[in-house]
Image (cartoon, rainbow, N blue to C red; front, side, top):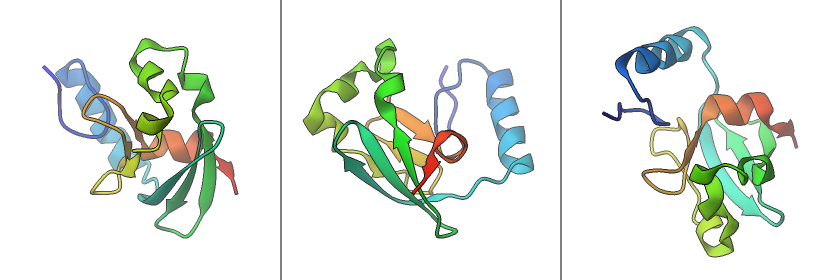
Length: 105
């Protein structure tokens, strides 16, 4: 079973940990995203901070391999509620990942 939220949770306990993290560590929500050359995203957060997120480190994993296709990579959009960025129902990144591992622009 897949549980709701940005990202996929394989079980209820994983989902509960994610929810607890979301309420304890309030990361800023994603306001906008722009795909750049070199598989990099420019993320604007609701607090006005811009960060670059390099997706190249993800491309070795099976679930992110579709991002190798440039036209698919460029279809990235912010989650409607600001909880990350999405490409499809199966491929997304949480705002916490983007905030923690992004580099300030």
